[in-house]
Image (cartoon, rainbow, N blue to C red):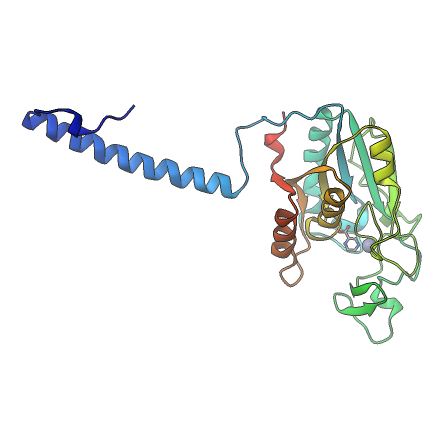
Length: 258
Ligand code: VGL
Ligand code: ZN
């Protein structure tokens, strides 16, 4: 406990000098600690390994597919880096669900399906603005397969999404029309899951939309940031984190998981 000098009615010169030195040191140390704590809080960090998933928790592994890593049709920078992190995390989870982006040939989210449009431009769809992508993750193709090093033998469900030709589905819960469920919420709820931890690709699209819909469906929701990688198109990553924070999605790191 730090005690004020005023509590000493008489102080010798040397005691005052000593206390000045120690107060200065204390202030400097406090400022440094506060700064470090501020940075840590800003990043959502907590003491390592303090979140322990239980039997009501599920790990959701979003779209860790060939299409989203180097050599794929819509590569996300550093996409393959999430594979060993997710494999390690999976050992802490009793319940694991995997998703696959699973488009028809000529899917409406492909720029090639819209005359005069190029990838990464947008178009108006009946359900809102749609970013147009290169052809990717076509059903049954090698490109749509899960990454070969993803090792999740205890995963119990693979949910495929984006298979309606005229509707995209970034979210693993609800298609982009905002109303067609994929069935994932029902599966998780029937199995008594209350908390989900979202990982995979891409942070600012399928991971974010999945996390936001998880909150809407009533799940406590964490995104494990370093187990995701982003596309970051026109500020989409910062916007996604803002939306997730506003919705009560908690941003954590893999080291936070016990
Ligand atoms: C995704 C763009 C298009 C994703 C899927 O998995 O984040 N992004 N389709
Ligand atoms: Zn897609």
